[in-house]
Amino acid sequence: MKNKRLVIFLIFMGIYNMSANFIHPITPTLIVERNLDSSMFGVAFAAMMTSFFIMAPFWGKLCAYIPTKRIILICCLGYTAGQIVFGMAMTEGMVIAGRMLAGAFSGGIMTAYSNYTINTSPADQRGKNLTLMLTVQNVTAAIGYFVGGLLGLVSINFTFTWHVIVLVSMGVLMFIFCEDDTKYKHRPEKKLTLADANPFSAFVAAKSFMTPTFALLFIIVAVAGIGQNSFEQCFNYYIKDQFNMTSAYNGAIKAAIAALTLVVNSTLVLWMQRKTDINKTFLPLMAVQTVFLAIVLGTGSIGVVIACDIIFFTLNAARLPVIQNMVAMRSTPENSNAMMGFYQSMNSLGGIFGALFAGLIYDANPIYPFILAFVAFTTAVIIGCVYVTRYKKEKGA
Image (cartoon, rainbow, N blue to C red):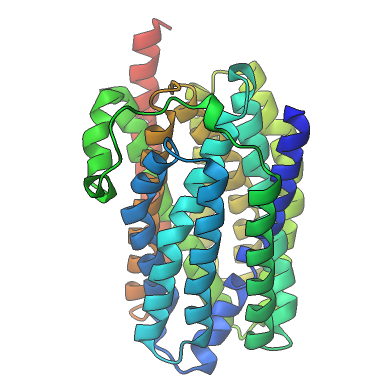
């Protein structure tokens, strides 16, 4: 029954996640057609990630008090409201407002997904199920890009209409059919207060599970997030702005990533988790990603840039479940909700600074965001070397 419930959850989550990505390939078109400032491709995403960061710890703590599927429903509806505002936006201010509203609830959705998977999985299946969940997220996100790119050829409004319909439908269906995970959780004795909405309380709460080595891992999450988001947000706008490619190209590129992600996550990632110590082997994965960012900087060919983008984000889809499983391996029933909320916060910090800086420096030179991505990943790899060294000493290996 548990496996059946997990499959149901993953199907609805996948369809929801696919719809959530309908809008990304048409965002550059929306910015150009509505004569918005070019920095909006990064600033708008940074605004969303800022509210994501502010709210993620609160949602993580709330998961300990109420059924996670109820949080999913609430956040699905809130996210949809923000997307409606975004779709109607004709000014930069309205774009930022819509994205911030969406981000406040998006943080709850992502935190709830991780918590639901952890809470409803046997301890020996958590790593495998988290990998499965993130694989579904990455593949359906790429499919959503592809479908959104095709819908965008009709019109922006047409894409937003289907976006909203599917979002609401999946939120309701997950609430109806997903399992109530209350019996699997440790309910805190202390009542939830408004003070728990303070995003920086997560840093205070982190003292209960943080160690110097573990802190390095979270720093890697944030710094790599800067590189990932600088590259992704810039690339999507870059191929529209510099080469006038339609949203269908963005979608086709993501479809290629989806196909490769399915192969890599069902082979390489599962092998890494079963046969290797991922606290060591995550590092070569990130180093290879950094090599492809270097190739982007050394070429003027759009074909090579597109190929590097596909390979980089396929490897990134492998990196994310490995890193998240490294965090989950250290969790307990008492701190797993807070720990995953903190993990999402560090991810969102990377998204905030990566997207914001990419948007602000793009006008000075379109290649600068790519340089930022390379520098960020190089830094993350260096920190990763320190992490692995400390980890080996702690393990006596």
